[in-house]
Amino acid sequence: MLQIDVISIFPEYLSPLKLSLLGKAQDKGLVSINIHDLRDQTNDVHKSVDDTPYGGGAGMVMTAEPWAAAIDQITNDQDEVDLIILTPAGEKFNQKMAETFANKSHLIFACGRYEGIDARVGEYYAGKSNFKIHQVSIGDYVLGGGEVAAMVIIEATTRLIPGVLGNPDSLKEESHSITGANDEVLVEYPNYTKPASWRGLEVPEVLLSGNHGEIAKWRKAQAERRTQQLNKE
Ligand code: ADE
Image (cartoon, rainbow, N blue to C red; front, top):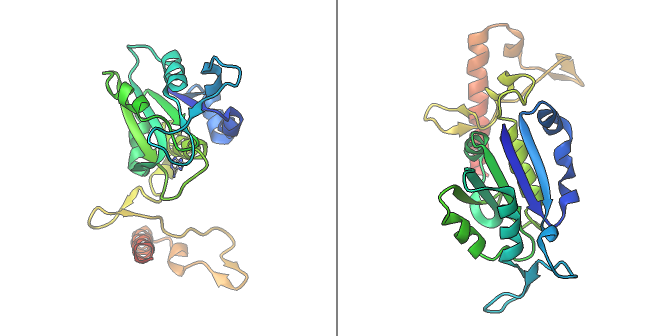
């Protein structure tokens, strides 16, 4: 079973993780998701988790100690852990990364806010042999914090775990899992369902033909056309 722990100062922000497919996956025992409040690891009356940056500059930096206390509480020295630190300065998340994470046993998501987390947190755990550190961004824009980014990664990752999706065939022919002639990753072809004629618009003839070879050819061509179009923009 994949164990996922998420650390945040806004645990309620992560409550959608209980819903839908992910809620069912947890009920089925395929994945276990625990949300932790970073402020539970503070000892002062203000439950403070940030301070001014060394070297000056605007904004606040999250202090290392509450993060380490939270991570230490969740883990032990035997546990193989992948620590995912959400930051716009990280490696760009993609389907391949989701596949890698889906094969892990324990993921911890550190959702920073403000100007991020003291860099020594990543450095400290990188020095532990049972930890692998990933600094990850979900795109070239700045969010208010890592919570939404963590949810994106958790949703993309957990749906790849066998048994999470009702029909595992849905994974076979979707965007980013189809490859073209040169092994490049393609987005999916357009899909249609009944009725065949709707508001004057017709479903492409080939899809009604029953000719599986022609249908596969058409779909591949459409996926390639769409991908080229996206790459031009
Ligand atoms: N925190 C703020 N912006 C982010 C982004 N784009 N990806 C991941 N974490 C973030």
